Length: 282
Image (tube, rainbow, N blue to C red):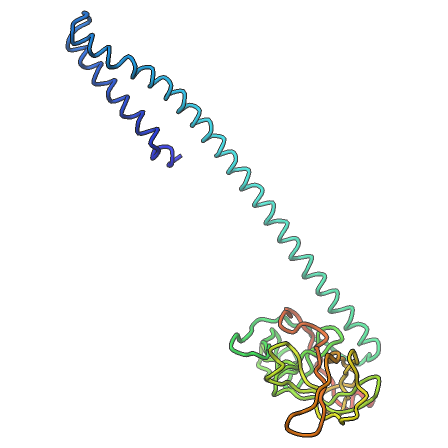
C-alpha cells in the first residue's frame, strides 16, 4: 500500500484534485454566471474532470489489486507456515530414521556381545579449525563415560573418548593422526593397526598401516578392530579398503580405509562404557 502513495499515478491524481479545488474556489468567487473568467476556467477544467474520472476508476482498480495482493500475501504466509510444519515433520522423521539405524546396527552388535553397555549421546560441538572431524558429545563422567571408551555409530567405530569431563566429552575421530587402534582384515586375517593421516584425512579416510608388501588385502576388504587393546573390543567395523599403496619412507604398504559412516555428519553416537579385556574374556 505504501508503494501506491509513492506512485506517479497517485501524485498526478493529487495534482488534478488540487487544480479542481482551485477552480471551484475561483468559480465561487466569480459567482455562477457565464463570465469570461468562468468560461476560461470551464475550458481548462472540463478535460481535467474527464481525466479525474478516469484516474478515479484507475485508483479503484489499484485499490482492488492492492486488496488482492494482501489476500495473496496472506495466502503465501499460510503456505509458508504449512511448509514450515512439513519441514519440522520431515526433520523429526529423519531424526527418527537416524535413531532407528543407530539402534538397529547396535542391536546386532549387542546380540553378539550381550555384556556390552551403551550410552547414547548427541554431538553438541565441533571445532571448525580441526580438520580431523573430532567432536564433543553430551555425556561425560557422571554418565559413566571415561577416557579411552570406544565411540560408535551402530556397529561402526567412529572414534574414542579423548577426554571425559563431568557432563560432556571430547572425541578423537578415527581419521585423527592421534588415533590408533589394532585392526585386522576379516578376509585375510592380516593384523596391523589403523590410524589417521593428515594427507588423506581431508578426504575423510584413514590408514591401515605397516602391511607387508605382499599383502593379500584388496579393494572392498572389511577392516575391523583386533581387540588387542584393553579398552577396545574385537570385531568393531572400522571401514572398507579404498586403495592399496606403498609408503614413500619405507618398504611397507598401507591401505586407505573409508570409514563405515560419515563422521562429519554425525549428530548422534553410542559410547561403549563398560568394556575391559577381562569382561570380554569372561
